[in-house]
Length: 431
Ligand SMILES: [Fe+2]
Ligand SMILES: [Zn+2]
Image (cartoon, rainbow, N blue to C red):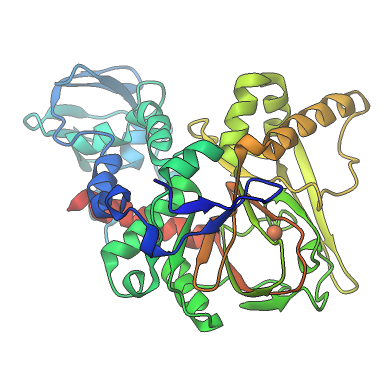
């Protein structure tokens, strides 16, 4: 039972936010959130033990009791020594210069200290002990837990959605009073933003301080830009050279593609609208990218390998930045960032002559997926309902509107938000 309801008579499929009196709370995800989080974060089961080791010419092969194996280069093993002399466990920083480790270093002796520990003696008498579980968690290459589990972890933590699936599965909004006072509720907000690409917080005071409060909880800092730190704007004054400051229809896009690091999150609070229209639109950019990968692999590869450039221009500022429209995580091949904004695309002079038609074909194909009604989630923000969007994944837009519409909002750096998110995942794994 979705918490939004269809408003009949709208020309486009539209939803208004549904106040809590008609919510089916038992259907909400909220009550079982932390259990889900803990299960999702434990991709490699703890307690791996080593069954055998073999020393090779340039590596050590390790076999675990679950039947898995991995090879570790000698220089890698020496570089990853975690003894207090080599590694500061307070700062989590290495203490030595890599130049001081010979490229062809070989252990003097390799032995098992029982099933839980691998012991290495080096020619200079230095000794390194590796925990069996640590080695299992950090092995690399094709055999690595990293390569095997990272993609599965990514898939597990993201719920990719289209119109039907998000309207069916969207959890109830979290309460402003709870996320600001209860760590578990705040954790749930973090995990929801990562899972769905966005989240709602209701009963938010209609003050800019309240939006800033949530921002600080999510990122520690607000990302200040040429739009300012915290925004309060309406369509009555065109404050910046951007269509967002008009009352026109806005197609789905992500923001700040003209920054080297586009904003990671955007918070939006509609604190008043006296008029018609102004429905809010979200599209899952990751879902659209996966759909493109399935339906037109060549176009997916063009958009994920071609570096496109974006710009912002007013009298005092001309920003330019570049990146692929669909960015792939170089470590595991999962989707990491969408940089799709046809409004802000710069003059397209970066393509070779014979690449132009194929690039346009790919761009049109992706845009068509994001514009298809079956992939679009429409609703209307009302005062009190704060929207938090993952700007590296979810496209946003709105329908045209009449009357005065007042918005508040701000950006948060992706590094700040995901840095806090990773720390929360680690903390929950330990509980
Ligand atoms: Fe925008
Ligand atoms: Zn050491």
